[in-house]
Amino acid sequence: MMGEELPAADFFDFESLLSVQEQRKLKELRAFLDTEIAPYAGQWWDRAEFPEHILPKLAALRLSAPAQRGYTHLFAGLVIAEMTRVDTSIATFFMVHHDLFVESLYDFGSDAQQDRYLDDASNLRTTGAFALTEPDHGSDVAGGMETTARRVARPESDGGDYWVINGAKRWIGNGTFCDYLLVWAKDEGDGSIRGFIVDASLPGITRTRIENKVALRTVQNADIRFEDVQVLEADRFEGISSFADTNHLLRGSRIMVAWQAVGQQLAAFDIARQYAVERTQFGRPLARFQLIQQQLVNMLGNATASMGMMVRIAQLQEGIFTDAHGVRHGGADMAQVALAKAYCSARMRETVAMGRSILGGNGIVTDFGMAKVFADAEAIFTYEGSFEINSLIVGRAVTGHSAIV
Image (cartoon, rainbow, N blue to C red; front, side):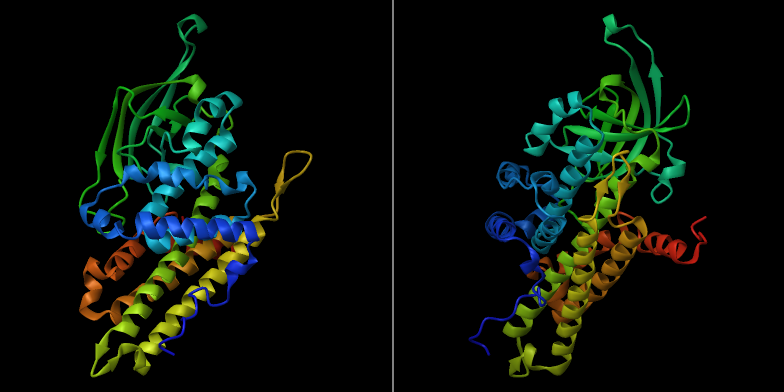
């Protein structure tokens, strides 16, 4: 067996469901990740440093908003899984910029806004961030948002109406270096939720990097303060008037985080299996011990079950259509997505713990890769809806009773 090629971690070959073109594109992505990310990811993580120099090469892959380019949702999910498999932080950057900022431009941007911002953002000549979470409001930000926006009337000759934004946001990925922020704020006039494209260099904006993280250290999360920041009416998303308008965006990003949970498990299995095959104890490879094989099989089972659930979510996403009245039908609903995120992240936690155990002491140093995977898993378990909140969303759907409030 030692001279034979070991089976892929995609044990049920879900990748074969992709078109030939998509399989080739995924292979191109893997080559990029193997040469440009994998050799350096541990160093960036240790130094809490984001590699901005890779952005032109990442943009050259032309993977922004895959559905807009004619790719399937399964392909889009596997892109995130493969990125996460190599480096969770790079995958997180990609998701924040493309799946939240760029997709918001597609979904809510006017023709003029798309003309101004979309090409540069899609090609990473500019970068964006999604400023929703606040210092005192994470899971309850929909009803508890404290950042405010006040409209000020002004003649067209003086530039037209503008908005004054005040408040604070926290845990904003890409927030320290991005060019633009998609800021969510409560309208002081009627209490509705508004969305704004905000130039991150405007006067009144203060950005501070969050230090001392033990997960996603390469991601540059920021605390951001807004003090009388003036934003033109032309940079308000006209299609947003309530938090409900953002639901399909958040649903999409939650799906991608569930795909990250799949990628984390594939990474843990890759590292643990290689270590078990190569590491010798008591005169034989770890892979020859029954308990080690059992752990590897459990890890593979978790990863395969998680991937199978996400493949089904991708199939449901393909069923989305809009009728003649502009009403959207089909797709994966929020409860289905919440179950996928909760289940996959729970299996991920089990999987990375088993992988860390297989590496013993070497599992707690970043030299061997597993420590980084183990630590980054905690961020995935928490963001885009914690395990508990996602569980309660599903609980509400299956019982008809809400236990959230």
